[in-house]
Each structure stands twice: as C-alpha cells, then as structure tokens.
Image 1 (cartoon, rainbow, N blue to C red):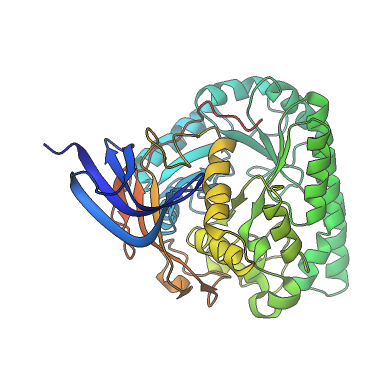
Image 2: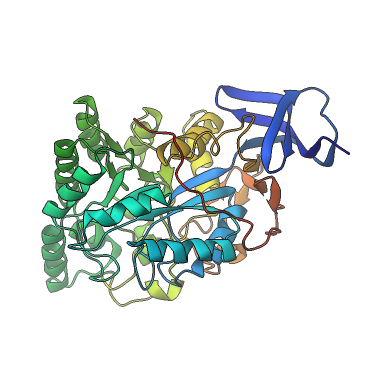
Length: 454
C-alpha cells in the first residue's frame, strides 16, 4: 500500500516565495506533505517539470445563476476549473429569485452537490424591508458574505436597498466578521445621466461610462463606507473602477474602520478610449470601465490597496449584447478562463513579480477575506489539495474553445504569457490542460470558516 494518493513534482509558488525541484504529496483530498529532492511513492505521480504549481485560484465574485438559474452552476464551474479556479464565490442574485432565505440557500447547496465541478462559496442578500433576523440562519449555514445594491437593476432579483436598511444590516453584522458588500452606484445620478444621453441620441460605448460617471460611484461608495463606520461593521466595495475609489477606502481604513475595496481584472486591461470602437457592448460592465485608469489601478494593486482581484464573471450569452443602443445591452462579461492568465500576464508586462502577486491576489487574499484560509488559498500541509499548474507558454485567447457554453469574450485575440496546464480539486484531477475530466458534483459547498480579514 502506497502512503500517498498523488505526488506532484515541480516549482511551488509558496507564500514566502518559489521553491524549486519540490513535490507535494496528497492523501484523502488534502496536502499531506511538502518537500524537495526525491519524491515519495504514490498511487499516481505527475511531473510538472518547470511549470509553476500554485494554490487553486479563488474567484471572489461570480454570477453563475444570473441567467440560467441554479443549473448554471454546472457550466460556470466547468469553466472555472479550466481557468485554474478551484473555488468560486458566487453572488446571490440568482434567476429567478435571490438567495435571501435559508430555503433558497438549501436549494443552491443542493444544486452545487448536483452540478459543481469546482468548490462554491456563497454570498447572501436581503430584499427591501426584510428583517435582519433572517441573516443569522444564513450565517450559521456558512454564508461567507452579504451583498446589496444602491442601484436597482431589477425590483425582484437585484433591488435597491435604502440607506436606513443598509444601516440596520451593518448594525446586525457589526458583532461578526461577515462583510457587507455593495454594488456602488447612485441611482438618481445614473438615471438622470442615462436619460440625458438618450435624449441627445448618444448610444455608443463611450456614452455608457459618461452616463454612469465616477461621481455616481464615489457618492455611493462614500455613503456606504460612512454607514459601515457608524455601525463599526465591515464595509466592502465589490468593484472600484478608479484610484480615487481606493483613496476613499484607505481614508476609512486609516481612521480605524473596517473597510475594503475589490478590483475586477477587466478594469486592469481595457480602456473605452482604446478598446471601445472594437469591443462596443462586449466590454459593457457596471460600474463602467473608465478611460485612463489602467496604470493607476495596477499601482493600487502593487501598493496593497486592493483587497483582491476577481473576474465578476457573468453568464450572459452574446445575444444579450446585440442591441441597437448600449443602454439596452446586458452588463457583464465572461471571465473565468481569463482571470488567471490575464492577471498574471498584466503583472508580468508591468515588471511586477507576477508569481508572487498572482498567489497573493488570486489565492491568499480571497481565502482570508471569505474565511476559507488556510484550508484554501495556500500550499501547506493540512490544506485542501486544490492546486493549479501554470505553464509559461504564450497563448492567444480564443473563446470559441472555452468551457462556459458562452463562447465569447472581450479578451478574444489578446495574448497571454501563460496557460493553465492542470487543475486539481480536492486532490482529484479536474482539468488536464485540454479537457475538464472531473464530474459534476465533485465540487463542494465551501462554508465560511474561522479566518478573518481584520
């Protein structure tokens, strides 16, 4: 009988730096040993050569069920493991009903057990007027965070929550380590600017950013941070698009309040002044991608001002983008198979330590933020054997070969410096570099553990 199930050899991306000619031994879905030199025997062995072995990526913001309902978990997590992502943190705005009750949480966990190729952690939410008494059962059942919006995209699935209810939520969450995240746009400003743009006959991608100006984002951000500070709770901005937004978060943090801000990878790659003519609605997200922000946002990442970087993956089919006006096109882009190579490539292009920055921003930080550390986000003995192998091999992204059932991307034709060579979920091979080889249901519900951000 061999002592280990699997041994993987290669270059490890550890928290304190790379370890060459190393090995990881896996037993019963966990990392049982790490060493250098001659590897121990195992039932299965894989030699990654000079490829990079990193913790499985945690995508801290996805929308698996916004279009196809709970079965959307299947294609989303299939795409995730093909992108080196072993855990997604899924938003609560499911179709047709948001995750705001214990019954809906139970239904989503059942869907994870049936459909998931990757692990899935979950956000919860509340509806307008809903009692704060309803959040405690969700916390007890492992919800990792809550999210609300200051802008109403749908009265039933994505409603606006009033300031007084936000404060009530913060008061209820203040004794806990659970973050409250926000979609941060001021509704009155946005609706007025959209009406003005339509009246002027402006309906291209450039009008999208102007109709949802930074002032709308910053106003909503500042109010949310102040309400969180008043209650002494953890206020989290789920997507900031300007370095000014991170200034606001840092001001509250420096004053001793629990405040964090997140960045999505498309804000680090695209600029409407540069890419708008080519991409049009294919780069429409909310809040919008801003002109002239890419360099400053990369500096924010390097300075440690960004809590973590996510994809904000949205499962919209491309037909949702084919509308006469930018204002009717759906907001959101696929991103699960491009998060890791796009972030790594962007960091490398700017002269950063791409390996260290990737492990920190895509693995360690989201694991700690969502209470999943050190079981996830790290390569250490006792951690779950969620592992990604990254090959330093250029690729031009072609979404027609994606595993998400969507087959489109704003990253089409962009060259990345790396590609995902293998993904292991719970010690089991999930992606072999070409095909997803694990089964639906091999992923697990990832309940919040004990790690804390503050």
